[in-house]
Image 1 (tube, rainbow, N blue to C red):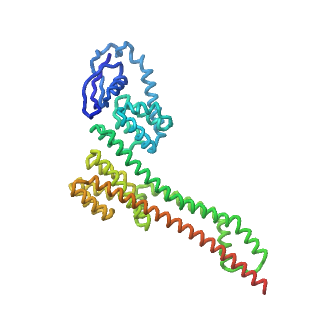
Image 2 (cartoon, one colour):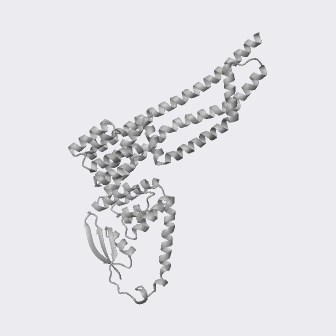
Image 3 (cartoon, rainbow, N blue to C red):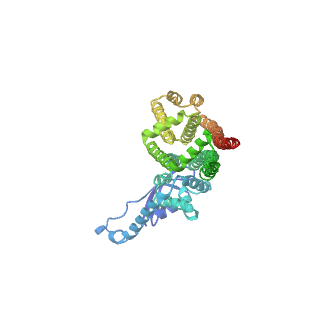
Length: 429
């Protein structure tokens, strides 16, 4: 029976090195999991004698056994193809399911194996199956995650790797879940805040189209049948309506073409940098973008530093989480100065992109040696700020849309009433 030398970590986090006999690698991994050990490295001992004709120990030549190998390779290839259907949204449900089992005492490998059997949701089942394929071959949890970059980003992978190295995987999983839950809640707040203004704009468009295509043509027919001279406001309204009816489709096509061209330009590095700079100058959107950047970097950096990631790696990974390209470039320059020995607060102050309150709190955290608590406090403060900004943004947009609708309806009413009075006066004469 083959012998396998292994390096593993027990439940207390201590590293154990030994060997065991097992029929195969998968069976060896199963035995380690049953003993409560988390495999780090498993290698088959090189104690076999070479055979004539490159035959394997069972007496079969290499050409007589590749069917199973090829079939497993085909399964792996098809799994890799199927993995393209996975996305980032599967990350949080998977981690939540995983920590439920690891908190009960199961190893990460055994927990993933159980999830691959028990989970019924198709996408999560596929993710767990792909993960177990990797783990059953002796890879670590972080390495298995690295094979699925569409689901797990570099920050998550590095945090899991740090948890495996320190034996605090459960604590790391809980912190990652808390961080992702906060981000998901923020996205939900943004979508909820934009839902009402979007609904108001949709209803406004419906009102305008109803007037142009149904109500106004009938009013124009009525006014023409009565004869008489129409006032200027009514003529402008009718002329605008005729223009929309005859040339509106060309205007819509032109606007759509311009929007697509603008979107494609924004996808380029130069376009993204320029448009992000424009956004920062807008009255309501600019402060909101700053708050988003502060929340993003403070949340991510605090989680990374708290879980043992080195400062240089944490700053580089945090930089990739910042969405606004102007702020990302500023943070990159600040990171370079930090790596040269300058304080983070002083480096960020040079960029001119971050509020004074943030810089003051960072400076206090650096001076007292409590940077992570300061970052968490900054995150909580600016999350509340974002909620308030979203409420203001929602009210402003809703008020603007309502005023636009009222003005439009008022212009129509004024034009119609003016025409009626003008025609009535002509009848009296």
